[in-house]
Image (tube, rainbow, N blue to C red; front, side, top):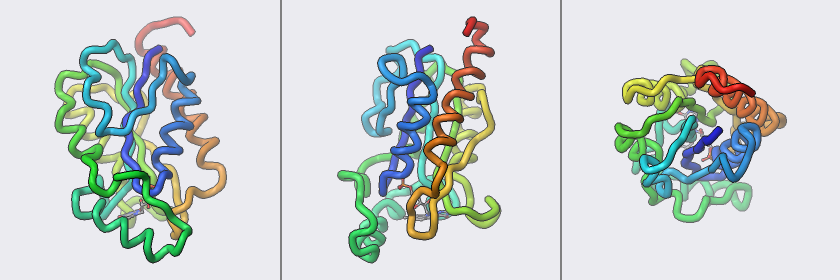
Length: 181
Ligand SMILES: Cc1cc2nc3c(=O)[nH]c(=O)nc-3n(C[C@H](O)[C@H](O)[C@H](O)COP(=O)(O)O)c2cc1C
């Protein structure tokens, strides 16, 4: 089964979750984890599943100005946070979703966010899932959130949960595609 995981990440958490989901899906060479600004030529390939993830910013998907603001978070954290190279100035998942129209694949959405009821935190995955469905993709699982603490570090157990979620996505995709597994 061929899968691509497309993500953006400021502090590395969403990237780590994307990589763990990729392991759960079966890993390379059939599974690729791509930063959204580098995932520009997917339409020429055969892909069974596209998984899309982003950090939750201001109750939804990162925008140009929320990305730009992350440099200040890093400065205030005094060495406890680092910025992924160039991340605050690159186009992200919001921009990537705008180019989705011609990609044929099942879909799944995830985010990272704070631990609290979603009505207080927002959920980028909900926006991503809605956009995937709007573009004609069928979701193989409900949008999923992975949790960071107030210092923007993944809480214990989230990488293992992401791997397990990747396995779940693989099973669901194969089931729907009618492939034996
Ligand atoms: C500018 C900014 C806005 C944020 N807004 C929210 C928010 O509305 N809800 C929430 O749960 N977390 C919010 N967070 C926390 C992020 O979701 C968290 O830092 C993120 O999941 C880290 O992922 P990353 O390391 O991949 O960037 C915000 C973080 C930043 C930097």
